[in-house]
Image 1 (cartoon, protein in one colour):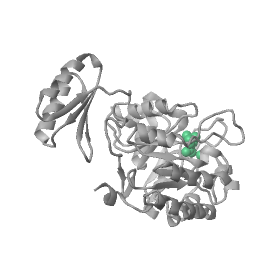
Image 2 (image 1 turned 180 degrees about the horizontal axis):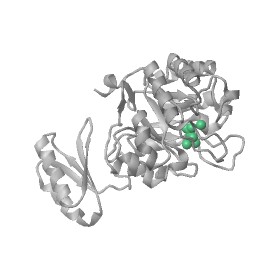
Image 3 (image 1 turned 60 degrees about the horizontal axis):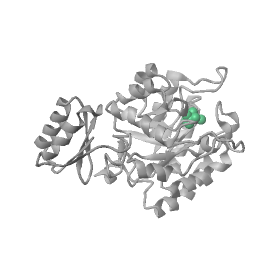
Image 4 (image 1 turned 180 degrees about the vertical axis):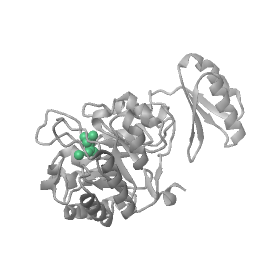
Length: 346
Ligand code: PEP
Ligand code: MN
């Protein structure tokens, strides 16, 4: 159920939260620009008693949530969620580019890529340290050393870092180094992992599964949010279809659909979405125009030597050109590549 407050008075809101909790629900406070909403999450048996809260003068309305995503849905929050990571804003009027290699491979490699993507205008550095590889014989990532190098390169260039966490046991160590925790496509429905990152106070970058529907993606976001972590960034990275010319089929229509259903930021990953470097820039441009809030792009100084995903990685010079080509489109869409969190959220 959703309880729309008619006031911003803290005492009145606290009173409603207390009532909701007394009825056995978990209360999530959602403070939007226009109004404050209390989402009551729990089983629906006491819903008629929740409905009675409408008699309070400072409650505007109590209504059931029609869709099953109580926290991720637009009904819970009208305005877009804006997430602040360091001085970077994600969502709202920001267009945010996360870029870096598929895998952290060495100190030299990650520092070289970090400098290049920063100079080209990326705001967040990516790099995998724990890699979900199809074959157990493929490079599995540098693990903790990779996390250390990624953090070091992020600090050297003034960028927050995002990296994948594959198991609940890894969550604490990844959270020690990363600013944003990535849940990979293969783990979109690893519910134990979603619950684990839901308990950590860091934003979660949640990728759509290879066979995941939009509804299932939002349900997975719901798992994270129901544990108390409201900062979820969604990412469309291509789904599996009968097409074999591209690695996956990038479902750009997911962007307007998710914009309608949810207030959470939605990113596009054109690298995994296509699997070929020469399709990355066209799809990045299309992503901007579709209304996406940002991109995740793989960049490698020497793609032919990459330990993973070289074929879909942009060389630095190509990444620079991609950034130049998307910039006018970002402006056209009324967004900014450089806006920082403080400027947009306040
Ligand atoms: C990645 O970002 O390197 C990755 C493995 O992505 P995905 O989970 O989308 O395949
Ligand atoms: Mn990759």
